[in-house]
Image (cartoon, rainbow, N blue to C red; front, side, top):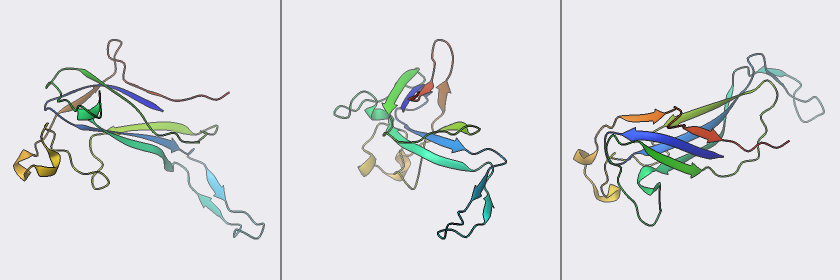
Length: 149
């Protein structure tokens, strides 16, 4: 799974969280087995949103983990990264949902949205940022999924 995002931000750093989600059909019912291991009951789970994969990219490392670099405010920039592999098949009738967000706190530490030393910054270093994800012919943000025939 590859996240290929075209973004502009109003500050010099941001995090990008991409989540791949399997959305079950609205009428889906999970049937527990009656072979001695289950209780034979039905559980309606229509519309359930199952997280398949989620991964964070700290924007400053978009080109290199060895040499972080700041964003140029308001300049459209490509942020492209691989999500860890996952063995998952979207079944017939299920939908694919993609969520892109800029924080996953408290699972991931907060980003001050500035190109500063995150581990030694103060509360005043944390600022709001305007983040845009583009989807046009010139800037085609996309999620690339492997397809097995």
